[in-house]
Each structure stands twice: as C-alpha cells, then as structure tokens.
Length: 115
Length: 115
Image (tube, rainbow over all chains, first blue to last red; front, side):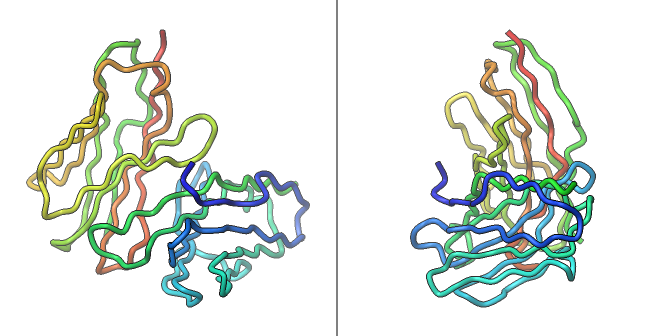
C-alpha cells in the first residue's frame, strides 16, 4: 500500500458527461501528480500541483482541469467526455521538494470507461 | 528532449530463469533521476527503485538488481531466478529537474513467467 488513495476505483459514464476523480496524497506529501494510462499513448503526465498551486502541465486537454485543496487532496475534472478518454487515471504524490529523495508513489488508479 | 525506450515489448520465461529488462534513456542534462515501476495484473504502479545520475553504483535487492551505465545511457533491470509472481508490466522512467519533476515513462515491458 503506497499510502495514496484514489476514488472511485471504477467509473462508467456516457459521452458528453462530466466526472470528478479524487486523490488523497500520502501523509506529509505536498505534491500531487495526475497521469493517464491508455493503450495507445502509454503513461502520460497530465498535471502537477504543489501545496495548492499548479506547478507543471503536461499533455492535458482543455476539457480536463484539476485543483488541489487546502487539505492537499486533489480532484481531476474531466468534461465533455469522449470515447478516447477511456483510460486508467493515476494520481501520485511526493514531498515535492525535488532533488535526490523526491520519489513519486502512485495510487491504485481510477479506471474510466466512456460508453 | 527527454525520452525513455524499452525496446522489449514482451518477454516470456520459465520459472527460475534469469531475465534482464532493458531501458535506454535520452536527456541533455547532467542531473537526472531514473526509476523502475512494476504494474502487476491488479493494475497499481509499484515503485521499485530510484537512481540518481551522479551515483553509478549498481544496486541489488534480493533477486532484483539494476545496472546503471551513463556511458551507454542505460538502466537495465535483472530478475534472478524469476518467479510467477514477477509476472507484470515493468516501466522505466526518467525525471529531469530541468524539465520539472514529472516522470517520463517508457512504453513498458510485459514479463510473463510460467511455472
């Protein structure tokens, strides 16, 4: 158990809908990352938050947004869903300090299926 | 640009065989970090090891060992006396502080160990 929790574990929805994925980081970690894993794109970085502020953006679509709350949990919002958004979405957390001890630990993932 | 290549898509071995998973990376920076993660059939991503670019010592942890060679930009992973429980997808990843702390993943190698 990495200490990172994600809910829900599975999500099935229809095209055009909006969903919210939730992540709670490990105790003491300030940084949260979101990644998408799909068969064709592999594991791709979406966005990073550090202590409530957006720190880095990767290949995140404009239809997707995220935030990190004062208690450090994070939510990833996916809207106007398309079939191609079906994927496994991972959250990871780290201390955020950078440097040689900053390792990302991953949650169990949320499997999103868009029908 | 940073890139991680895992040329072996799938490897099949019989229990007790040794197996090496290859990882080649590209980065222009002198300080970077390399990782291996394991994704068992249950789907979670499990952290295995982190290696800093300035530490070229090889590492052994039980049946697992890692060979880091800066001269060939490789960070290979060997499992000695493989077991069925080693069956998983293994990902090599790169973090380059100059480009932020997000992980750049290879496509992964699926290891199947049969009894």
